[in-house]
Image 1 (cartoon, rainbow, N blue to C red):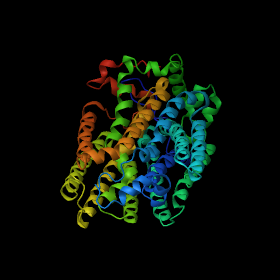
Image 2: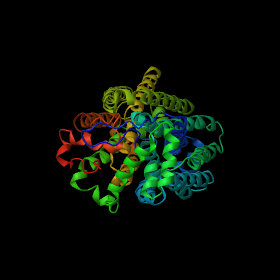
Image 3: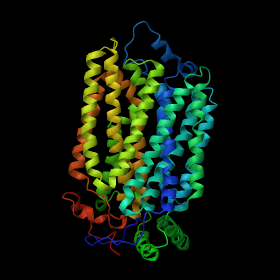
Length: 507
């Protein structure tokens, strides 16, 4: 449900008179706060795994390698058990995101976000009280269930609630809160690292704070009109739409158009996962898989998780490495704000393309510096100026990601699907994102140990591939109402061969 209008494939979209109201801003901010828990976890994991008190309690083998007289800087943190602590969350999140797509149709997006916040809160409590690795991993899995639920529901909630003209900015709010959560986690890690005995428990336990925010936010907002109509609650849908559009909007006309889209989808609501595999949805499935997969193959998630480890490899001390992660988080937050300002003015494709080019340059430069300074055997120390150059290049890389693949990975899947496969499509997209995150976090430290500085060349090559994909296969969706999204696929040079003209959008 977009705020623009309902249109046939080549017709103009209808202006219902809806504006950016205080209510829609507050509602979208509350929903976007679902990104806090994901961002906090990304930031906290890397910092905690760099704390000696945490490593001595659960992963003493890593400390023994750190204390070795001569060590390969690339391989110090190469521990499958250590990476299992980080990556176990994503297997749980993958399963939860697929379940959430079915649960959403029964109880709505708002209730799924509420459940996600509760599960994350429980996981934070278990991790803070952990006494062994098994307990840590159980806590991580509860966190994963919470993230899987909120990541599936929140971006679609934003896309269905926001006015079409500003949908990109509002949906980018999810990435904004993710960046805020990440920055907050890095600041927490920097502070708790100075508490030798139990600082890591405080870092893990404070995950309850962003969980409480999403719980409060989900309690204060209504469900989306589309979700309410799917469950036959027409009057509540009208009230919810009037609340976010304002008194001057033609709520009845917009609700009628959304209702037509919902009714057209009812005939196909069963077997949504099977339907998305059909030829007529080939373009939806391709983008649902490619965009989140490519986001992870930028290499940013491993940089975000393991930035303290990376900076220590580059020659920073423990506290300096944690401060480097704080700087990285602040840069990412600032660039996400830039994306919010520009995404609906210049469109999605220009941000993807400029971000891709900058990331390639930065990764190649980091590979060259690490190769020339640390060497292939990882036995050399990096000079201070080169360590600072690595930090600067990583910050520029983070900025480029923050205005491109970071927020747009949540924007694109949330807006391209027709109603009948929207929950299933978003579930697949989140599952691919979390599944790829699991594989990359589980293998990154081993990859760094094996490929050395060429790890960054590997990711640069993938960024080149995904940039080419955007050029050839991703149409511009700026300002297109959700109910009229079929038109862009019908006009695309390649995807039009799979589209049945105006079937889903034409009343």
